[in-house]
Length: 90
Image (cartoon, rainbow, N blue to C red; front, side, top):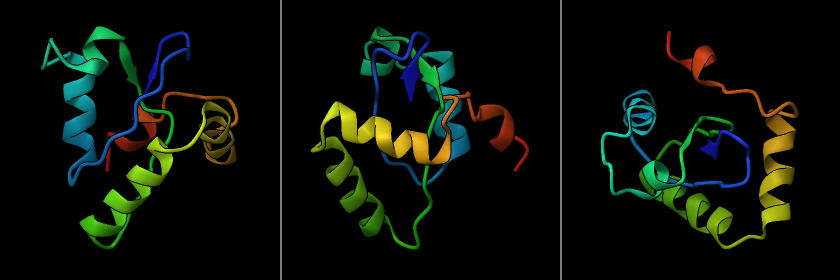
């Protein structure tokens, strides 16, 4: 997830992408990082066979630099478009 101006990035893991993105967009948890920094744009996601694989990748991404995160985003979404519109009809 990214803030409106792309200055803040958030990496998380979920078993239900659609519901979780809705929660971020609606700022359901007003004290959360994404609410505080207005991270409401889905700019990158991956799917995995197991939650363990997803958690391992989350940790790898979180441990990386801002530049490595931008490179990863650019491989899937070079325009940093909000992918929510592409996924909400799944």
